[in-house]
Length: 315
Ligand code: ADP
Ligand code: MG
Image 1 (cartoon, helix red, strand yellow):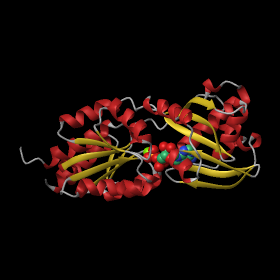
Image 2: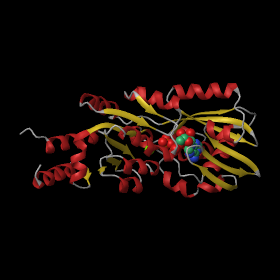
Image 3: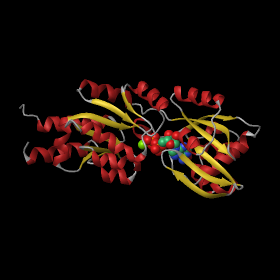
Image 4: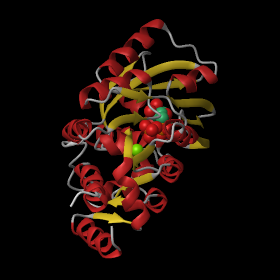
């Protein structure tokens, strides 16, 4: 392609909200064999909502939610935000169903800490959850790995409850207090509307879609099945996503990565073509070669098409 053709293609991309950082990135996209999608916030809407609250002890539901929200209040994780928001509505309105569209959402956020327990020694444990002390007692909120690593026993009835959540594509979050597993939350994050059609489109173009996530295997597989992806890599620690990219590149294949999170930036950089969701974090956008400004996954196809058309030898 001539420099003019590249310039025109870059302009066409920009008009469609596909920002391309340079002609090399534009050229590489035509050869893409695998597109690796992050799950949360990329294939899914990234709007996690608490759907289930189960307390296994005699603890009052409101008290349980207050405890979990207190523990999660300092976390930036989308799951933490969903939990705090749900608990806040439960606390103030006793009506969590208004979770997403509360009219004075922002105003409430500013008063967030007033109603919570005091927390000390908070720490975020990437890929696992969080830990802190509440009333001098160790409080853990996260996945099985977190519980196992901390020596918390997961009774069979709790495990069964979590499995059930995961099989319906939800993420199960376990809560331990003072060494005991006291409850579980179920969180759902719906697929983006266009996700399934884009996956189908990629298959038709001869491109293989793959999902990579830090979430557990069962939830990941349920989501993958819903969206039409056969190849799933789950329970990948934040540092591991770039390794997944490299494993696909080993035989010389051209690999694209689509992601939105801080966790995704090493993988976006490692990929031959890094595509960041425009609504994603700045670090992801910086690491990427393409930015999909419309936050619409159809633009993954637009980007590959544009490259194929620009560099096709057929006239
Ligand atoms: P993802 O690829 O889905 O963004 P993360 O590495 O951020 O994955 O998280 C992986 C898993 O770790 C989550 O699915 C959840 O089980 C657990 N986790 C991480 N942070 C938190 C948190 N603040 N509260 C509860 N669970 C968490
Ligand atoms: Mg994400």
